[in-house]
Amino acid sequence: MRHRSMLARHPSGRRRRVPPRGRPPLSPPPPPPGRPRVPRGTTDTVVLGTAPTGTHPTDRPGPAPVPPHDGTPAPGPGTASPPARGAAPDFDPAHDDTELVAARAALAQGRRQGARALLLRTGDDWDRRGHRITVLAQSPYAAAWSRDWLSAEPRSADAAALLALALVHRALRGKEGRGPARDACRAAAALAPADPTPWLGLLLLERAAGSDDTVSRIFGEVRARHPEHHHAHHLMLARLAERPTDRGPDAPHEVYDVAERTAARAPADSPLALLPVVARAERYRVLATAGLEPADPADSAHWTGSRARQETRAAFDWWLEWEHDDHPRRHVDLNFLAHAMACQERTAEAAALFQRIGRHATPAPWSYPDRDPRTAFRAARGRILGH
Image 1 (cartoon, rainbow, N blue to C red):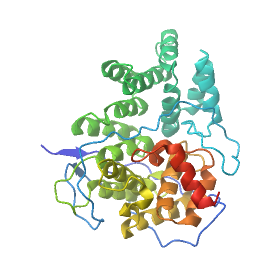
Image 2: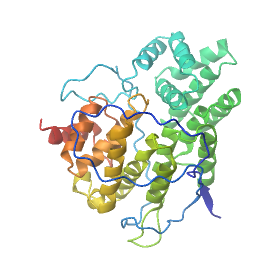
Image 3: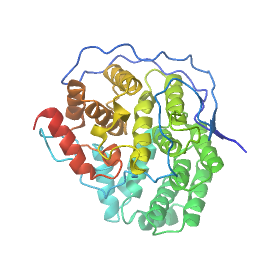
Image 4: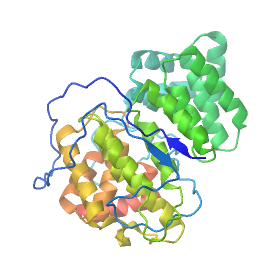
């Protein structure tokens, strides 16, 4: 039986085109035009397990699924102030969200009002809500405090979502059963039917071990509520990248086609434009873990082919025009793009990205395939910036 991927375009309202934002400190010569956009409203379907034919670079067969680094380090202090040149990366999942950092610190002390007020202000900004609840849920005492909160306010969708994500993270760390986490996610979804965050929790829980049908169905529930959900698309590409292909050593992989089509069908100002770069990093992780690519991405031809350069060039071109300095997960995108530019030795572009990242590094993709992300990030940044 063939299963359908839910990375098909979901109809949504057209976004208003906004003026280009500021440029990074270093601006290289304008790159060639990026890929053409497909008119919105076009639908597309990808069948899981079928590597479609196309013009993508050759790719060797992948191994059995390899769990990715999940990018959930222990919470750090976080900062929004401009970092010093060469400052140590903090790998704080809160990035530069100072309100989130303050609410997390209060929650760790048993004071839930900060988190309560923060989530109330966040409202239905779904990417930001998912990001903030996911970070709060990683706190060691998040499950206990959110249970107390839910006991005091049984109809609080915020408390229920926080408890659900906290149990998901505990289950992923082997400290909680998956059953209670699933039940909590479904209970949270029932309290707030329009909220994709409880479904994001289920996707985090099932991404590595769930069946194709289960993962696709959950992803579909996320996209039915927020078609451009940033975190969910990244999780789905990581899942697709792990699917082996039986079409021979020169067969392309479906994840490239899926990422390209999804990016092309997103609104012009959507960060999903960077998905092809994310897909290439996730596929590299799988191949390098299996010993089919060098353990150091800088030594891998995976990044230097014409298609890889075209993807990276188009993504950087998008960033120059549409940089979302207010998107809650923008540092994730910046790290994936800086990693690709560094692997391709595109010094000017990589330098601009590293300067914009500052100390807000993310474990993925610097940890791929099995590297210390702090060492890898600092080495790449030092090579590009010359210190």
